[in-house]
Image 1 (spheres, rainbow, N blue to C red):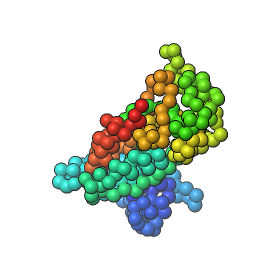
Image 2 (cartoon, one colour):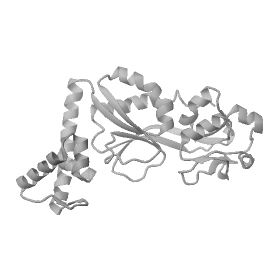
Image 3 (cartoon, rainbow, N blue to C red):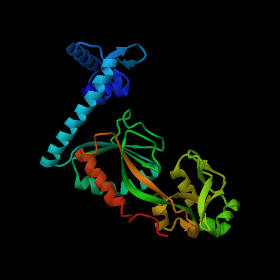
Image 4 (cartoon, one colour):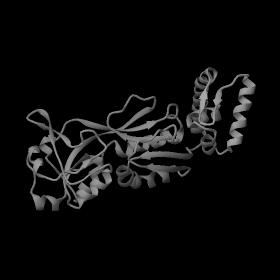
Amino acid sequence: MRVFQRVIERGSFAAAAEDIGLSPSAVSKLITRLELRLGVRLINRTTRRLALTHEGEIYLERARDILRAIESAEAEIALARSSPRGQLRVHAFPTFAVDHLSTVLPDFLARYPRITFDFLVTNRSVDLIADNIDIALRVGRLDDSALVASKIVDLTQVVCASPKYLARHGRPVHPSDLARYACLTLSHFPGANRWPFQIDGQLVQVEVKGPVAADSAHMLLKLAIEGMGIIRFGDNVVAHAVQNGDLEVILQDFQEPNRFPLWAMLPPGRQRTPKIKVFLDFLIERFGPAPWRAKR
């Protein structure tokens, strides 16, 4: 059942074989043996792709339910008799991975020495099932999804600039002043050049522009620290730079009241697995109370 499910999720015998640790021919033989035992064809094979038959769709749905139940039962037994173990494959965006996860991970590994990690650190979106991800960290509003979402913390967007930039260009005292300043924006977010502020009790969108846009928050953060312009990021992104004095939070009196959740996204049925459960609890423990948040 597990092999059959992985073949469908990955779309080929070869990709499933790589994940499972078998040869493609061994995977193909297992699926053939399963079809012979059931007396029906589950997958139609062509040179280009695999397609489920009607019977295959029914079997896949039932198999997923059964495998989730087995995994849940095994997880409960494992949690009761031993410490969590195994590899965790985690997707995280670079600024959070580098500035925050890397600083607390040694404590987690000291607490759970039988857990290992494989990190996918990128700003691009990933498919948790296809990329075999256990946990993906995401910020903001979530699209409708079959994934399980667990909130880590609510973040606040803050506007920052380096002391040397403010010394050279002056400090904006009102959001409308930003039209005269260089603002650094994320290029892969819709409306990234429209920054919301609370002005006279109303939410106002202020148009900004600057010399650099990028799809990497980490790059823009470094440029801001070097005095290239003003940024508007989550307080988790700028926390260390603010605490170190590399950046200053500005326009605090006009800060947007809306908050942006940091989520841990999981494939269905895995939230009770011991290694995942303890890592989720650790993330909430370390990042929920917000000792790392920007001091304003």
